[in-house]
Image 1 (cartoon, rainbow, N blue to C red):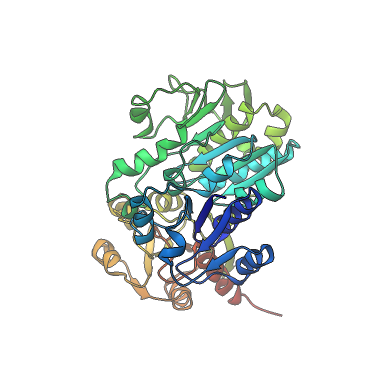
Image 2: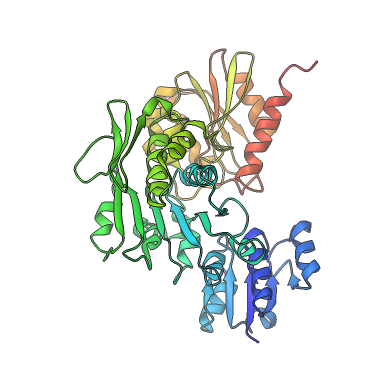
Length: 447
């Protein structure tokens, strides 16, 4: 019996453990931190051995193969030790892909992944497809393959997941954009990050489709390095040579893989960045053969994604917007560009090698004040204090929201669009956004 070790016991790790046990592996789960009670219960219920609070070398290094949580870096000592012994280290997505012949619709990019993934899933469900939602959102792909298999999966993929995928194949691959993000995980070298994103092309065949934004500064150049055999479907903001989907004079247009058009005003998601997300989603589902009426209706009634430019409430004439998913500079830029009132901007968290020069001028134009929210805000002070805007330095969400209320004027927007990961003060991006929403709603008058 082959021994498989799972590093990390959250959603993906526990799902991989369940699938591995089902397929007859000797399974052991090891987490350097504390495992949540719900995941311990899942493992215990199935009799899967686990440890927390550290990795025991004698139990981990005996693996024939290891499945690594995407949050664990390559530099982690146990990952280094496993690779040093020649033990293959793969992702949960790679592992799950071995045990299903389902059609895989995979979405990656620095920004827009969750919105586009959710929109494609929404469209597939509306069309009545047997479809699961997996990857960075939804349930573990491995757990679904083990216990509730589907004929199709819509999967949001991070660069970390792509790093550890080798034989997995995306039948429809969507690459939205590549802008600086997670550079701390890539030796602060942009090319390393670009290479990770381009891995979504691996193993595609002539039966598959590759969808990308033609305006990206990296993707077109990188494609010349690859022997791409899949059907290439570029989209653009406006008609341009080579683009098969675009907006034109108020119309939303697809030329391929099947002709489709609708008024742009009927799209449920506003803004240029969401136009791109909608074009990518429409191309993906038309490549699957979804009918026009379903696509048109789904693009019109999609409700949007939590933590992405989510209007929370208006308090004392100030609108509070939760954009906690903006974990890089480019995402914050899109959020700021969509604002039409003076902004009190909340920035900060775990810096990933950010270059804030991309938004410095925009911050100066759009913002009334800045509220820094992080364990260490020195880099933000260095970049933005010279703009002369009022600044508040905070280290908890309660202090942050109080500072925003103090600095905002009637008619302003308070925007949580932090540019950074959340792990210095919060469990994750969702925790950050939920704390913000809860505190904002607490300010509303109560009967």
